[in-house]
Length: 101
Image (cartoon, rainbow, N blue to C red; front, side, top):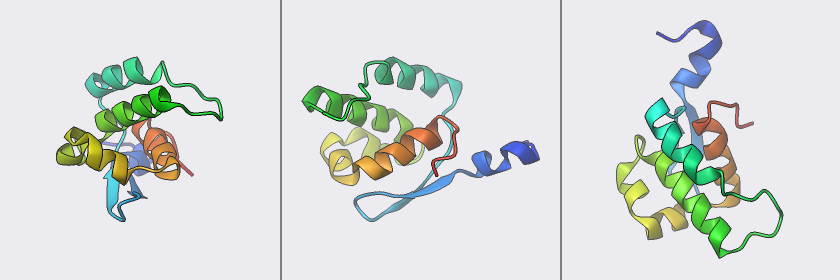
């Protein structure tokens, strides 16, 4: 059971995606966190994103969404249409167990 300190994280963070759908993102389990961290280690934090950076972002988002929306997580084209930079940042923060605001 979640402690009071972690209650908000346990309940998840509602994020409105670029496709207009609201999804509740909870922190990743250790199993999915391992997959996620292997992907995001290659993510650059520079302002100039290239195709490789965007591919890494989509791969990371796919792992973060596996438990929430598996159909979207497995459909790369639909996932790219559902993501924008704002919701991607919120998704990454929520998946890592941080406050996205």
